[in-house]
Image (cartoon, rainbow, N blue to C red; front, side, top):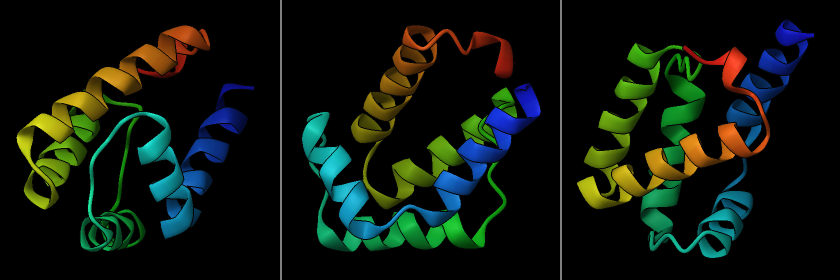
Length: 94
């Protein structure tokens, strides 16, 4: 079951649309521009992302801070951690 969930998460990251990202940003109180959304989507589609390991998350957050800013990256990291805990998915992430 774990691999199935990981595959679903990876697929969602690769297929995330600009409209979806803008919707989630608004829903969770992030302030990002249309240009930043495009850059984030481009990054997700063209770079290997591994959110299941600490090193992969750190790399992703560094990229996010370069695209947006450090505060937005920290806010995203906090939300990610909160969602993992809320859904009881800690066992998938190291």
